[in-house]
Every structure is written in C-alpha cells, then in structure tokens.
Length: 209
Image (cartoon, rainbow, N blue to C red; front, side, top):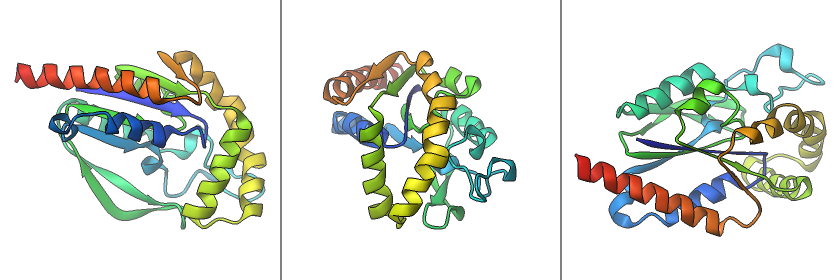
C-alpha cells in the first residue's frame, strides 16, 4: 500500500491537485487507487470549547474524528475495506450514510490537517503541502462555499476572519515543515511526478502478487 498525504489551507486546491494526479493514472491502474477527503471525518458536533462567537470552529484540529481516521487509514494500509463517513456541509453534520473504500494499492488523502497528527502523518509514504497565497485561497473558498455549500457572503467572510485565517497561522501553516514536497500554484508538473510514483508502486505491487 502506498499512501500519499496532501495538506494545505482551505482553497489551496487540494482536491483539484488530487484529481490531476488521478487523471494521470492509466486505466489499468486506476481501480487500484482511491481518494480520501479528510472533510469526511469531521465530528458531527465539534467540541463546545472551540466555539467562537457562538459558532462552531471547523478550522481547528480538534474538529476532526482522529481516532476513526487513524483506524481507517491503518485498516486500509493492511489491505482492508472501510466505510468512509458522508458529511453534509449544508447541515454541518455527518449523515447516516457511508461509502466503502478499499481494498486498494494506493491512496491519496487530502485535507487541511492531513500532516498535523504525528500518528497519521507517520502512515504516509509521501507528504505534500500546497502553499498558495492567502488572497487566492480566500477567493477560491468564497466561490466554492457560495456555489457548492449554499453559504452567504457575510457568513463566509465572518468565518474567514474568526477561524480560517487565525487557525491557518496557528496550526496549519506550521505543518509545512513535515512535507516532503511543497507545491505552489502551478501543480501540473508535481501532479505528473506523483502520478509516476504511484504508477510505479502499483505496478510493483501487481507484479509481487
């Protein structure tokens, strides 16, 4: 099993980058590769002590279900299948549904705090951090949250100043030090290199059994 962790601030293009990698995986190997989103592992109810101005802080590391994430990554690395939670961003709640993932031979895991927890980080074979300027990240987040998550402009701006920006500086940006590769706004070359590494690993695993 080959695990790739992709971290970066909200709006840095993590999902887009992961999909670029997948698009470079040949058809014969693509069924052996899975994409996981750390957002799937949000707690249904973030701890009350994280609330700011009465609203939940979804940009703090403790807003995630780390025990479940560690369990799933460990089981996937052992060649098992896991039921990945489905999170609804319009209600800010985990649904009753789940999506089966695995077994597979390579996994891309993307999320803001992919490299934050030492145990989770230790499971990855390749750590990547997307470093994109704050104004670009904010504009991307603005467009996404209005279009895909049904949020208002005022809500997005308030959340950015209350939690997104301060949590990025306090918790997220320091995880850049753990990256094997730091990628900027131009991601095509990096995506090709990571895809080549995954193809090589999958081919090796196919050959060995």
